[in-house]
Image 1 (tube, rainbow, N blue to C red):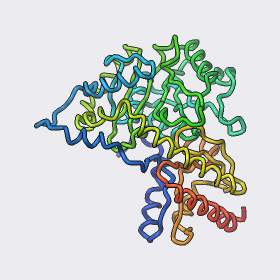
Image 2 (spheres, rainbow, N blue to C red):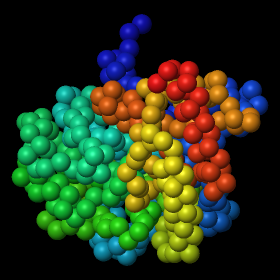
Image 3 (cartoon, one colour):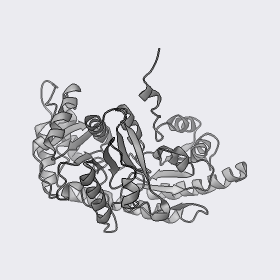
Image 4 (tube, one colour):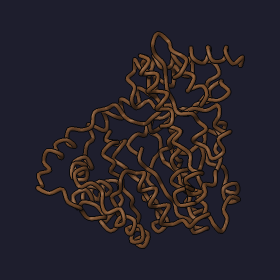
Length: 400
């Protein structure tokens, strides 16, 4: 029996594929400090569970393929507060941000069409592109330049007649960077000149620190027809398992065409939509609390990590990830070794190998993404100590 070319060329998740190694370590009685996945440990707001209790319909039926009215209303009100005027006809509720990305790419790309992707990028973009037989074309970013966009000429040189869009996360997963106004204007101008879509994945917008500049691409003038917004409640409100996302655009024809895909998959769970409508909106106390926790974790993790000889990174200004260069030959082999063979007083550590965040995996062999959204301060301090001793032991074994 044969399989499709696109599924054979699709990689397993570089974040989730080490789960068997983690489970193996736990089965041996090892405590694993898990920094490989962006699953917050902060409690979901009580309003979500109150919404579940208030769901009293006698039949759990199909709902509108576009989304539940209460949730669309909540999103429209929320975005109005950000200076973005959305009607229901601008929005589609999706199974998390992932389905929003899959639908966006499927709507605009034919097989072998190309999408520009600044790399390192969110690792699942690769799989989403391959679902539509589209190709990711890397715009290479460098830590030597603080992972900022290259000049206009370097980006334009990658555009061909098959280029359909520029795709990125802002704030960035895995980098923790935020696009400057100048970078946003560069993307805007290129998109307008070459008639490209801008797929702006903004699921970490709530977590920007140190007064860093941030705005949505939908706050920019003159590009309403180009911008496709990806959003999700998963990270904002610590409800990753609810799988509620949003695909939005002022381009009404794009929304109308994408709606066909929403109808094909029928609808998103009415129960989760009903409960999630309680979350969207004015929750400043909760968001300030969460942001404060992540900020303290970032500061401690960055400080301790910088004390390890041979480790380098660009200080993250947003989200809850840190992307580092480690003094090892291959971070994939290293993290598996940590989980399979190393322990420090019954404890070890997991992280996401950097190769999965690049189209050319070789560029990420010495890099690693750490998530600090699920670790309290004492766990972070312990994790860095494990990493430090693990690197020392591994380098001794490998004669690095």
